[in-house]
Image (tube, rainbow, N blue to C red):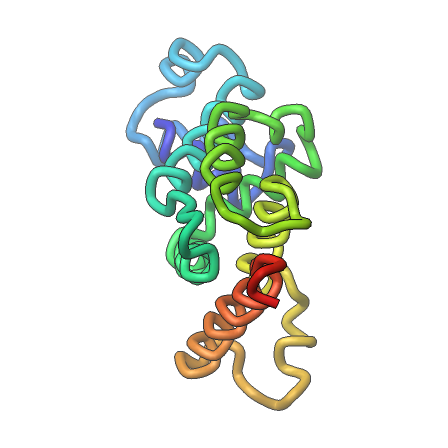
Length: 178
């Protein structure tokens, strides 16, 4: 049920997600979904939490290899676009829900704080790394095609990943590295 909800909300958002479609996709009925999750808001929040915690488990931060971690995040978003999509819907439609699960974010900030990246804080690093790793998935397709290349070409995707790793390598250097 939760996977069906995640897929539905990632595609249509909180306002557009339909319990009937989720029930059909999950092979259950609407009443059962409400019995497990209470209401649409709670179901959305549970799907969002699942997406965020699944990503955190699949791609945990590596303070000794932030650039490699950023590349892995890039790959994860390509493989599992629902996590990024539902997070964006949450920011638009339920920003208070997007702040959860705090434990996941706190754990990441704590882990990343081990990286020596002065003057950037752990939160700065996380924000910048996520922004860079997600950039190609959030950029208008017209811009991605502006140089005449196909943004879905495997070589182009590999070049984007390489650019993500290079960008994070540059800004995550410590003062001693400069």
